[in-house]
Image 1: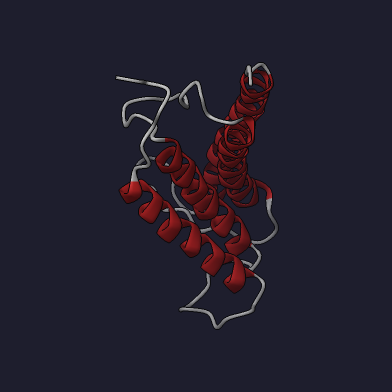
Image 2: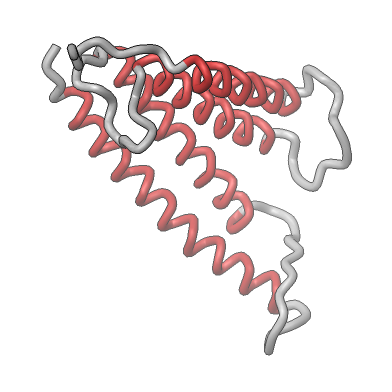
Length: 161
């Protein structure tokens, strides 16, 4: 059996297309190109980051399906073209960056935040504690994005064509 030939996984391609399309929907909402679906609890531009997350995840699935990547695998097949590996890598970085950006807004953005927690703390400390926790998580998320970008770049640009 020739392992250099991979078969397209059409189920993943279809799912990736659907998820990427939902990302386009959220971006369109964020740019106020289509009507809002319901009540919005934050600035409209946050929807652009949500669209980036969904769109990137969809593109990642499209590449996985198109390259015939193994379901348990974390690396693309060795014969994947560099352009496809680059898109796969960039989609991961974009999704992580979108998640980190949302956390950054929760932690450091203007306006009040409403956090629910049970336990010893209550009242006005809830916002301070909630923002602090999100801030700590956001710092970790940005560090993960930086490492993902660096490690992915090394892997993509070290590929033999």
